Length: 364
Image (cartoon, rainbow, N blue to C red; front, side):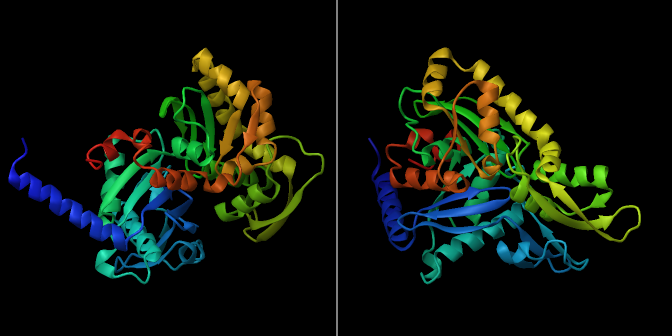
């Protein structure tokens, strides 16, 4: 039988939770390598900014975060660095990640009393991270002002965001091509049956385009320019109409500025290796999936999420390679953030989809 002291401690905790809950709002965060999206319960997605931070190396001061920091990329003096505190979907710089999270949490609660900004936070993370990396995300969120921090696998959050019946005894397959990682998972009964997390995604594709321009055209371009080319004319399958884009950079022979005209065929060739790696991994997952779940997936199709799924023809390529229908979910860029919002709205019934190490001790 619980002691009177433990009863008082439990009552005190409930009162504190009630007070903080009244003045703060539950937040879902898609903590991506390229972009961070913040979903606020009752308001929807309120923040969609680059996961970029500008730091003064002399003083250690944070100069800018998000959109303002991204404008500085490639344009800073030597004492200012513009970095991404997350690499391949995991925390690489704990202090900077903490500052970034604090900035986004405070931005959500602008106008509220400062000392009462203590929201519950649900964060989507790649499925392949280690226990140490999970703890780093939870601690960063708590140090940034969250009174409770929960974790959810990104493919699970994306599937929930796509309104797939993840808690039913049925197979659901999701492919989430983000900035730092590609998450491929088969989900059933509220859990991940089989999954792979690849360090081949949007950032790797940008690097592929940079390398292709260097090797084929002796042209040095930045990753920002490469990303623009990927978005404007990138494709995974031959297109009916030829697309072109002028690309400017530095000639590696003369050292002078140079402009070339890139075509969709050039970009397709540059991206071919990374897309082939993703395709082969999807085929491997299909081969390892139990036959009963494959039958469900063939009826429902493979669902694509993430910014990389917007590459022209990538759904058609996956469908041809796997012999399974493939469809692009509505608004794939916000899938994970919307999924966290659904979980926050029904935390009691969706506790099982949370990651054990990030949730079990916090739900008591």
